Amino acid sequence: MSLLSRFGKDASGNVGIMFGFLALPMIGIAGASIDYARATSARSTLNAAVDSAALMVARDATRLTDAQLRIRAEALIRANLAGNSDAKLGTYTVAIDRTARTVNVTATTAVETSLTKVIGVDTIPVSSTAQSAWGTNTVELALVLDNTGSMASSSKLTELKKASLDLLKILKEASTATDQIRVSVVPFATQVRLPTSYKDSPWLRYDMTKTTGSGSSKKTVSITKATWEGCVSDRDKPYDVSDAGAVTGQNATLFPADFCAQSTLTPIRPLTSDWTALTSTINAMTPVGNTNVTIGAAWGAASLSPGAPLPEAAPATTPRLTKYMILLTDGDNTQNRFGDGQSTMDQRTEAACTSAKADRIKIYSIRVIDGNRNLLRGCASDTGMYYEVSNASQLTPIFQQIAREISQIRLTM
Image (tube, rainbow, N blue to C red; front, side, top):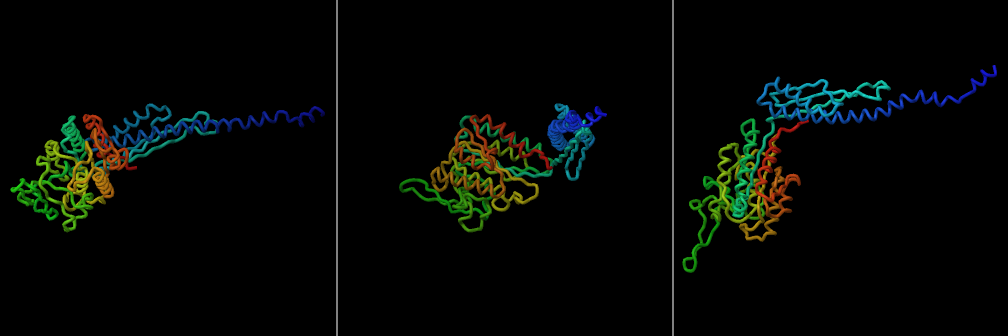
């Protein structure tokens, strides 16, 4: 009886027993943190795989059948999951809506647990969904390109033409519907030039003059419709930095038809999806004259604005429409209609870029070897949309990248 009494009072083994009871849940909790970290990694991999599949399927939707697209989606998901042993493809669906032009891809996986199994959790389910669209967005792009005399050096204009033609090719191939992507070309020097078919436009004014001869034969000549060769100078300030929205019919708001300072300057090509015509304009560009970036930016914005002087653009509020400008120059501002110095001209350029961005135009700016770096960087809509090259041959990959960014099929969810 004494032995039984001592046994009943003995607590020396309680800690061991208590630890035994607590060991399994403690191991399970510790294992859960490890297993859920693995699940997080699997989810990241699955998300990337599903996003990639949705984008690729949307890209190929116009040339493959639904059955082929589903096979392609599965192959893409499996290929992207192959590097993560925890992310094994479970169920998946690929829903293709050709009316709405959307692709919805959903996929699941189940991460098998290790230590978490001791608390009854054998797998952690993971799923991912992505939607992409094709042919639903429209683009308007203005190519505002320096055509000044300095572009003749270092093969700059030759490389610019090559890069621009590459960009047009990418955009043409990306366009799946008529007028889905439209482009304008605005070659600029100190002026811009229009086809003379615009001579009767009510937004032009004919009051510019020039002096000819010398001595007793010196005289002042006024521009007329008959003598106008298509060149246009800066509008009166402050309208010189804005698009066409400020045209009211008052003389100060009109565009000055002027004598050509650069008679070989290539005329503007208004917004169009006529790829042959755009190619012709790019090929016709020649280097001549001094630099006035402001007039290029202002006319680039005008080509993307509905109404006078170039009415082809859609309103900025049009659903699923994005407007872009690529502004490229190889030098500092040197000459405008007002005889301003570089500092004042730079302020006008900055104001023109600010006005364009306020009109919902996203600006890419490119500095080719020379030019005001800070000015051009500030013109870009963000720092990632500013480029500079030390060799003109670098323009082609930059234009290719921009073209793909502009035209790529994007995830919508």
